[in-house]
Image 1 (tube, rainbow, N blue to C red):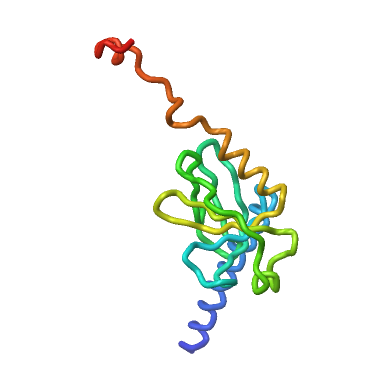
Image 2 (image 1 turned 30 degrees about the vertical axis):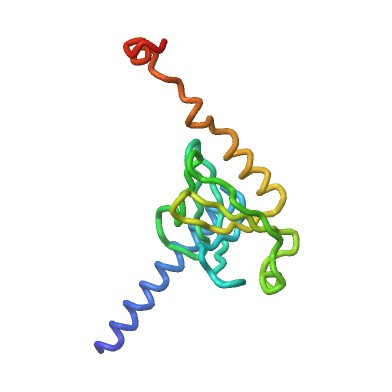
Amino acid sequence: MLLNILVTVVVIVLACGALIAGARFLTLRSRGIPVVVRSLPSPDGRHWRHGVLVYGSGIARVYKLRSIRPESDLQLSRHHTEITERREITQRESAFLEAELHVMTLSDGEKSWEVALDDAGDTALVSWLESAPSERMVRSDMRALRRRGIG
């Protein structure tokens, strides 16, 4: 009797998890750009996860498709993220990544990731990063400059 209840509870929990994951997959798939991402350091050809990159005004969010987290799995700040390297996929990676993808290494100063994208995804990411004004271009407070005798 107790075993039947336990099995029923486990089946219900698994069904709910599958339903949440399926809903997340279907809603995210149409909202962003498909990517394959992994955090660094990582051995060659390992720990890649499929996801969707969704752009916002200051933050891009990566949602891994096989995750049931309600929030994003990775956030990239437009002001702090930079592209540090580009490379082609390795022979080992070509077994599970599509041939037209290439890899970009992104860094925010503390952490680094590799993102595998096609040409359209690459263009979109570079455009999004470059469209933000530089922190040097933020206008200074003119009253503060005048008080210091600069303006």
